[in-house]
Length: 107
Figure 1 (tube, rainbow, N blue to C red):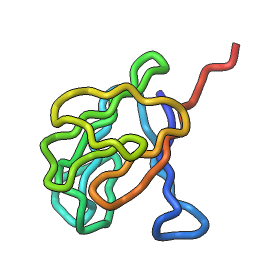
Figure 2 (spheres, rainbow, N blue to C red; figure 1 turned 135 degrees about the horizontal axis):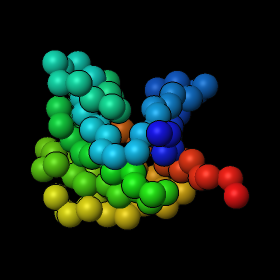
Figure 3 (spheres, rainbow, N blue to C red; figure 1 turned 90 degrees about the horizontal axis):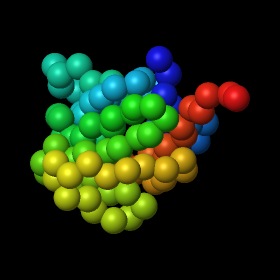
């Protein structure tokens, strides 16, 4: 089930996006043998950098002890400590910046 999107304009002025699904989504470096839900081709992103968990319309990010850190709205988060996310939050994985778009159910 679709839970949202991460999008970035860092490398492409038309934008790049990744679909986030319900459950845990792995964010990591694209040039490795590890299968990531959000593969990022940037040298400052670790192989297993972070996870974004999407459950019941809520999203949290957890840094997986990455080398260059995970940031939410410019603030570095503690490794292995889930941080709640909101629509439009700016997420940085090492030196790669993305933004969160949450998919909401229509009522």
